[in-house]
Image (cartoon, rainbow, N blue to C red; front, side, top):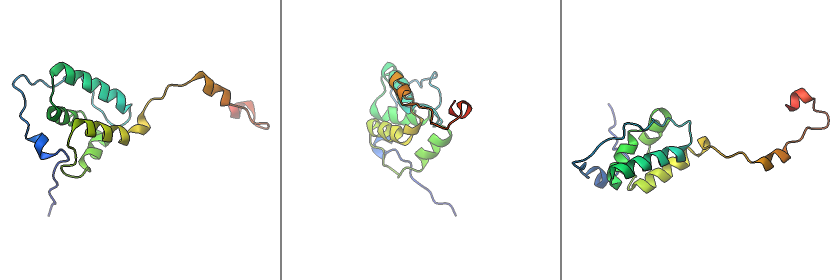
Length: 124
């Protein structure tokens, strides 16, 4: 016996009809949970702006850019819990924050120090 779960996207968003001019962004890479989530959101938002997506269309199209662990994460969200793209992208970025790229600053080099009895080989 299988338990049918509802999808995480709220039914009022799912009820939105696709516009007559709808086109899916063919140039967006899939997101698998291993790269910077903010970068994926930026690329998606640029495409959404170009194609004039509504809030609901953004949610549904963005969902289709998720693969592997990102898709698994989405599937475990509570049914009907996503009520806007802003909320969806916030949850997404929070979930995959550990994959975010951080700029390396020169000042961080000053914190690197060879310990007194540490050999050069171990230090490097």
